[in-house]
Length: 542
Image (cartoon, rainbow, N blue to C red):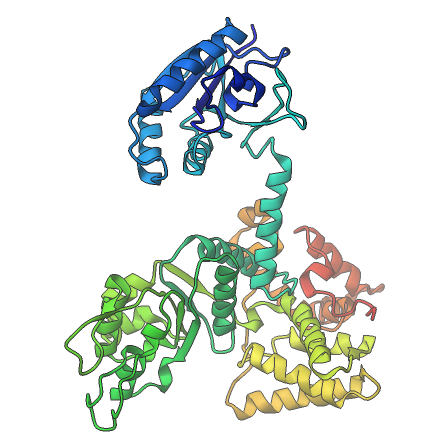
């Protein structure tokens, strides 16, 4: 048995109005609903302001004359101000909560053509939240007004599984936001990509503090600014992005820089200063190296974050500033809290959303796309395109992904390295000789800085293996596979890695095929040489 059609809508005090015979010559949205010969409206729940009782009675009679089978329930709503969102929504909400919906036998059409714009928005929200379990109904007049011409109507289902075009737009916007946060770099590290995906959701949905941790040069400051730009593009912030490195703040200057001061607050305070917290009003404040703040400044910051109010130095009157805080640090604040160097209440407040950005050495598969991005940026800045020779690129990536490259300065080291190569490249081509010289320079740089290459680079097996394989591995197999992968990443080819791994047993074989033995070992875990070592030996296409 077909479901009955039930329309829920506000009576249009302007569009539906008319008392004399001339009303039949104009298009009236509510009346038009029952004038479609191929559509039967079984019932209309007509909401109307009590002061328009006379018009409601005319509507009741007119609908009965056009469609005697349509039942009309007049529902008076005592709304004082039809443009007051809170009042209109509350009235509609209260009515819907008391209404007995019967979705098994009836389908509900929420009419959004009549009523004030506020009433139409409220009707939309009621359907979107499923307080009214139906679809939206939109009516439109005929191109040429004529007696009895009902015009057109459209049903809009907000269920995104059916509304494919809208769903695709949401999906596209999400993908564009992720690409924006990653600066358009097609990163390959699964954990990093998952981290950015969550940060994107938090950035556009939350105004709470965010804590970014990770080594120096991992990109905390850059990511904070990209988050601000994303929020700005979504019209979620009106203010500026204000950044300060807390390691540069000392003594009275720290509190003055952040919270401002009144003239004469201390020696040298010759004028009033607003402070960075007030400068960041309606925007984003990024406090890099927040662990370097003194305990007094930490206490003042906690009050400012929680209450949006604080006391400038030398002032007897509090000021306010509504900003979002993003904090960055390369320290483990849990240790600082335990040792009394960082307030536990402030840590608890800024740790609601906490993300650790991995260093470049922990993202070897992302080195290649970042190198390409840096070369593209270099070309845009200098107007001179530069590319690697195939052998040079293979050599550079082989070294960059190996255990001999700690990348202690992370992306700052990589950016400087690519800049040097691009600057010295003759004819727009980076040669193997240039790469060898750059490798020596990097080794010297890291040795001079007292950075020893890590004996064992962390291998994220869960990013390489399928969930089923990773869950089935014994600890013995896991440790062995990690060691094999380290050798593979340090080697220049599959054969070279095989020679190192089978350096004893290969001497006892009449037919030596180290590459094949290693390939079969990796295959047991569903791995390939390219997946393990990356594309360092793959041919380069300019």
